[in-house]
Image 1 (cartoon, rainbow, N blue to C red):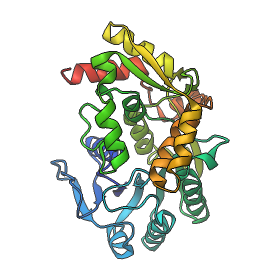
Image 2 (cartoon, helix red, strand yellow; image 1 turned 180 degrees about the horizontal axis):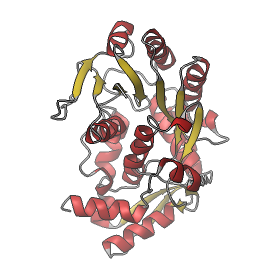
Image 3 (cartoon, one colour; image 1 turned 90 degrees about the vertical axis):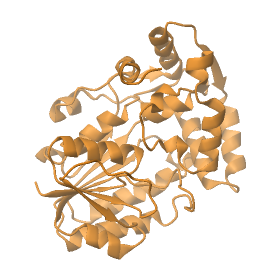
Image 4 (cartoon, rainbow, N blue to C red; image 1 turned 135 degrees about the vertical axis):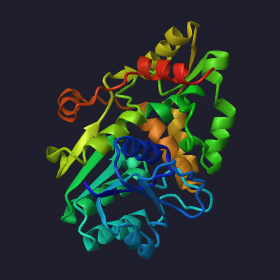
Length: 326
């Protein structure tokens, strides 16, 4: 199907997308920043294009001879020197223009989950603007709105295992708040039997693992019915934060104490951080909404259409334990 350009190939999701494409024997272009610590996989199918979405020329050059694009890049958890979501709409307009210039046949984009509370999470209105740009561009598209990622939010609960083997974990990017949080909480769950639960711990989410999100994005390139759609993505089960802690307890064979973080505290932190750190406000807003609002996504039809067997929480944890000594 021609070359596939992966935007954000050095990120936690983008790197998995790239690996899956290469495993499928697909010729790829990895678009990464020159300052990135990206270590290219050893593959003759891979070409690396260094650039930045802020630099239109580099984006346009990367799109040359490319037929399909998977875009995972975002600055909701900024790297050192970045500003939170600064000019992200303009950056994606660069990508769209480059795709039009080179007659790209399909653009696949990862966006944020749907809820009535988009306004409480500062990155979400930006994501919706980018969705609109893509839909109005005339480029055949697939937009996935992903539920909470196990690999990220289980780490937020205090699990070090959730990011085991991840080369570029989002929570350990060069952003002071996530790095500090990770330093203070990583391993609480496995080492001390303490799980941090947003809200009252009873709110349910269709947690999905990043490997499955990547699989949907890759499969979308070859499934004709995937085009011209926004698809909600979730996992195979809907669990409360407390339920997740119970699965950890069963997998590790020990008692897990549940420490809830009241929604009122998360919201207060969100408001306090608003003038100080937009990225910090966004993180607190995400936790506030995920601890406040039940989300349920029936994945039966979509998983059958894409022929993807979804990974549940138990399988995710057991797979991590099997792959990494702990």
